[in-house]
Image (cartoon, rainbow, N blue to C red; front, side, top):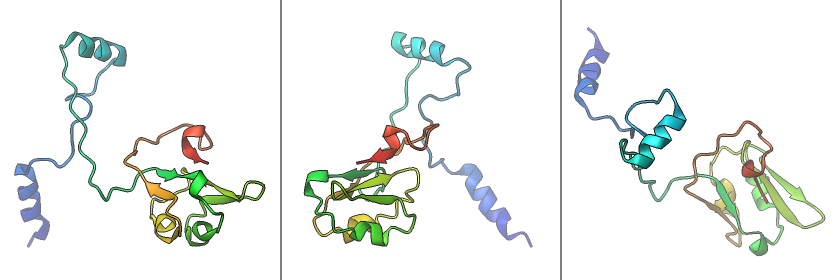
Length: 132
């Protein structure tokens, strides 16, 4: 009669998959929270370990790059530009969909995925979101 009812009951009693990060409850004032952490009143939860296959921010080894443009060809998000004067690439992380196709196609393995996932920024062209 209600197929989702059984699933709802199961989830009520399961342990959550997410980590309460960084503290158990959201603080009203961050500066007060930092003072409590320094004094030892509040304990910060450790972050969840990243699996080895996690796809985070791209790492680009510029000196290994041969300028073949294969990564540009396979990028579905058009997140990679070619810099003609240097024969190197520029990756816009704000456009990247973290599919890892550029890593797979690179003949010299100069592109890798890191474990870095905290990439939020107010400026999509900030230095943190451009890999050169």
